[in-house]
Image (cartoon, rainbow, N blue to C red; front, side, top):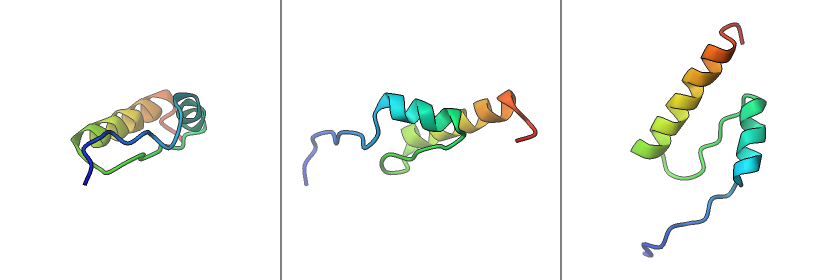
Length: 52
């Protein structure tokens, strides 16, 4: 098994476009860092438009 970091499947610009469309991307295993990122994005989207 390799310890080298795996390159992300989605570029930052694609992630931003998905986020603006309210689509969240899990690009790797669900660990503490990715879980925190997804939770933060969910909270931010809920704050932007609570009705959606």
